[in-house]
Image 1 (tube, rainbow, N blue to C red):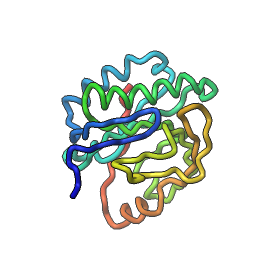
Image 2 (image 1 turned 120 degrees about the vertical axis):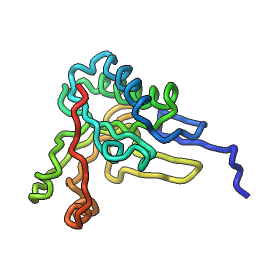
Image 3 (image 1 turned 90 degrees about the horizontal axis):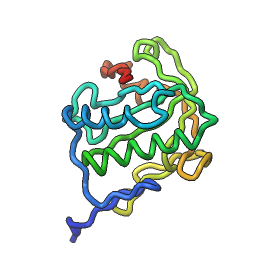
Length: 176
């Protein structure tokens, strides 16, 4: 029998013991105001990506991409990424998946066959929910206490195939 009162999500240094809610536009706007007021955030371009753009009821997280900035100031980036995720859980009970990307492109450019290497910086190389690994960034290299660097080809094979089959992805939307 499953204990429905037990819940844990671990993505070091973040540990959550309360299931999060589906995202909604009202809480997203409040989180965005908090996030955009973080020290150092002005050094980055902030983008909303993912399923939340098309239908917030069709996802359990909100994907945020940072680009630009001074990647040599890794402690500033670490604080921004970790704090943004924590604000999402602690203040709004929502999962924000926040990562730094070397490049973002439009869906049309990807459909035209533009593939590229995306050098990403992520919080933790692993996420564990209720004792099971949700994801593990294979090949990631630790670059600070909580940040990991990993490179991926974009779009990945799954997304590219879905695009060719007519699935409509939304282009990233700049938030600042």
